[in-house]
Image (tube, rainbow, N blue to C red; front, side):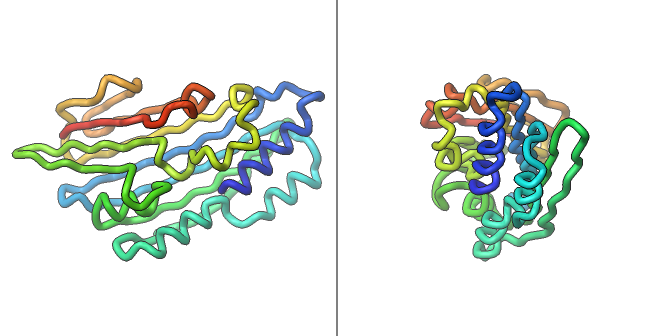
Length: 213
């Protein structure tokens, strides 16, 4: 994924003099479905939209393997997880290019999900069980799709891009308590956060999403 995002942003940087850089948008979407036994499935979607620059460069970008292939390989190496689908698609217009890459997986435990989605296998997702309730905590700074290592080349320009990270949880029960920050939307058993990944976000050491159910 790092190679795809840095190459795409590099194309936009190359066209900076000709067009507004803010026209580039990157979406890093995570959706998780949890079962009562703490198993479940997850879907990652990486979308990038940028103005037409060089037809040849865009074709080279489109010929790359799925941007999430490396993460799919991580999943295949987790005994309690399994790749369900790995797909890519395009939806170009006369004005811009649109690439979408997705990875769907199943997992047996939150620890398996952590090993599949996070930069480190032992940090990023925790589930604490108390009598009659569970508390799930996800540190978005540990999610591999937003890993700053893939953005270092563009760190001084990060505020010129529109990069958004979202996490959507589909819980087995209605949440009884949700952390006040960051902002979220909730509907019945669903909770969703959308975070702008700007310089303020990347300067944080942690960004915790907390939900009790």
